[in-house]
Length: 326
Image (cartoon, rainbow, N blue to C red; front, side, top):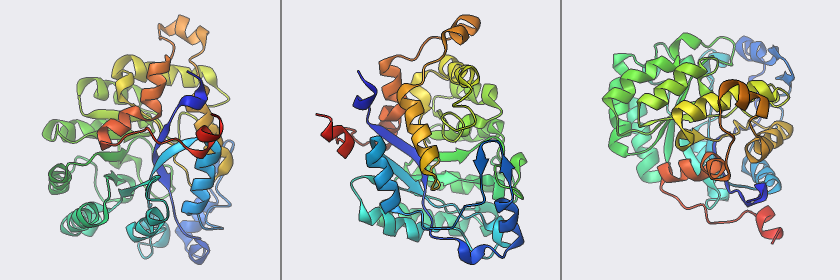
């Protein structure tokens, strides 16, 4: 198998219109001023991040399908205006319904009151064809395992869709990491073993906890978006290899889910797709930690087969890049 034979299924790609009209909010200025090694946020929101842009990149890098979703980030606008909406996602998916898969974000559940998010989620799934839902707890007023979240999880269970969860540290100033520690998933996974739960960002920096959770619970999967394949770790193969090796050893390759965490940056998108296609755990890391290399079968599972199984879809369709290579 060559890397070009992989059909990639992206679990996390964000779409939102230009945010220039929000730049006067102090919280938005806080995000724009954030600094991180090898990553700048100063250009966020200067142009539409829409389906047309994403599809061009998908075809360029051989991505077959993408699960697209909005982020509200209400903390950046004093709770007044969301960055994006589920309605915007409906419009964008309609442009390329054979390539884009709608993922809902109906929170913050506790802040809004559980009844409204439950109603909206049911409407989106039954009337608009949404296939999964994301819980983004950093901007809410309580943790993932807050008992008041249980009616929402019951609705997810009733609708029989996978649930993705932001886990680990919050990446947005003014939002709180204490509400999304991966260990908070334990009670959810115990109470709702029928819900496939995808813990985004390998729970970073709580990688060991996330790997063990997935090992303990059949329904907990490990999403690698943003962390593995980012410009932070792509130049650090030993560190990336230790993270991937740990997850693969304990959670098993059947639990790995690839994602780009796309938010408009073409270079970062290229890095993420290149990583899942070509990264191999360095031999020194395999030797020092006892990790096994990534096999072709494991790479296929990670790149899309595991998520396709959860969504009940086929990966047979080829992208334009794959078609042109034959």
